[in-house]
Length: 205
Image (cartoon, rainbow, N blue to C red; front, side):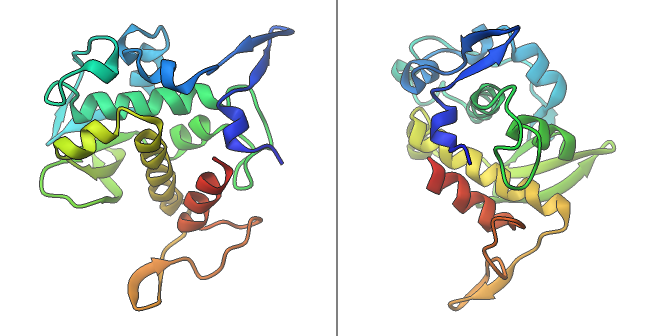
């Protein structure tokens, strides 16, 4: 089975030629997502809201690692997260144990967007607004936004989002180790739950 870390450095088969998707994740994350030709497609597939407002403007300057943390906004971070998901396993099939599509297509088929909301710790799935299904996430502080300039932060966002999207398939939580709702009932790579997907992705990375 292909590993997701490999996906971040793969060459995908497209038009009978090998074309790099993400060759260097550090350099990739230093690019503004707004400069990417795929962004219009991503914003058509996923709506990003901040406290109820639909966000269509994502100010950004490069390199992203040099941006002032106040300018590196939560909507921009989630757009960057979706951009990584879009590219990391394009044109691959049967590499994820819970879907026969790519991670991006699976998410697109399950949710309509991400809602960033003040006062939320972590996040949850799902909220329906205007007939659209959203994963709700918290509005991160300066420390966490700075953390999200790097792969370690973005990968955490991807795992968290995948966890929440899995709930749309009817996978809930159970309690364990004194933690309410802190586990899946089992870890079975043929039938992964929400925590299972998150663990599988992190193990692969």
